[in-house]
Picture 1: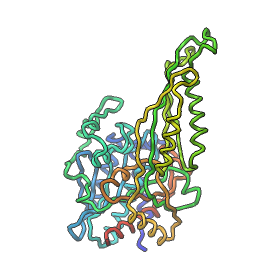
Picture 2 (picture 1 turned 180 degrees about the vertical axis):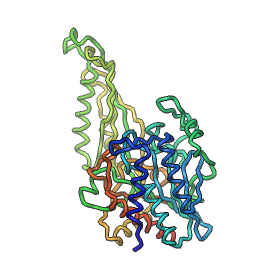
Picture 3 (picture 1 turned 90 degrees about the horizontal axis):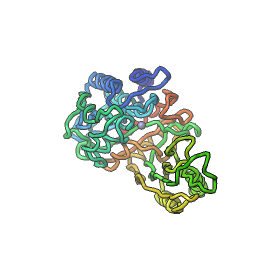
Picture 4 (picture 1 turned 90 degrees about the vertical axis):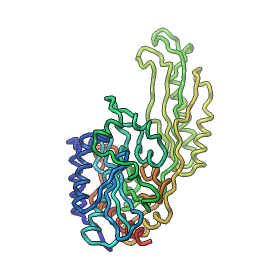
Length: 406
Ligand SMILES: [Zn+2]
């Protein structure tokens, strides 16, 4: 079977790791930052050298295309080049670099293809500088209001609209990916979890992205002096919050063992060591592929009493995301190709959200996962051996060629 070049794959990873290099093994490459623009420039330079035509849309998503032999919709593959603060060299960027390597292999090996083949770069996937995450795939798939997104500002007060104008990458709305001009979308990504590496599996055939709910759970008590208020008189909102975190763990652990849930943020007010907290809230993020299990989580949250340790308790649903199944024909291609190359593989669902999940509502879409060493992601030690990156690129290549034939 035809394969990509491992040497070229490694060269791409090394080259792109310089854009936003933290000097500690990772990168900080916030969307539309000078470092992100450098990475975009390098991508465009390399794609142009391969004879690809480059367009951008009104959200600065990049589409670099090798023309096909026929006038047909394009087959797209790619991911994002932006990172979180002190992120790694694989999240997102590997999906772009493997797509570039596939394109380079097709050009270098003169592989015939009927459809145009496009490398896509999604703008501001991480939402680390401009919230929310998945911003640009969200706009073009109709999830987010464009005007709201343009008004999103970073910590210095720069709006996304201003950064977009200054980037030189703002293009035309008519260049957006639609189901008319694109036939399929493939996104290779690191797993960002420990399962593939732990089971010594090369390729994750991603069946979809899990559904999730995100709650804000809050408590109102009474502040008072830490030295003068006897314990029986207290309405300590932090103590109430702790009781409910314990309750949630006790109840959620009784549900399906694939359920994952997290309290990642807690706000304690007034936040002074000599004052009893009177205003406490925390987040609850819960994810599972089966909507019934998510519904069971909802029911656990709804059983939180209105009064906890003499404090008023309540909750608010921040957002909910349905489980997104990927296109079964594309999923089958990925699995078949992993098998044909002789790579160990398994089917799984993605816990994190990806641009592909939003675009799956627009056109046939799927993802390919490669292992993350130690399961680490969104940190500088994020790592995937070049061998695994190359295997992923090979599966991506063959899947593009399968889509081209049908
Ligand atoms: Zn990513």
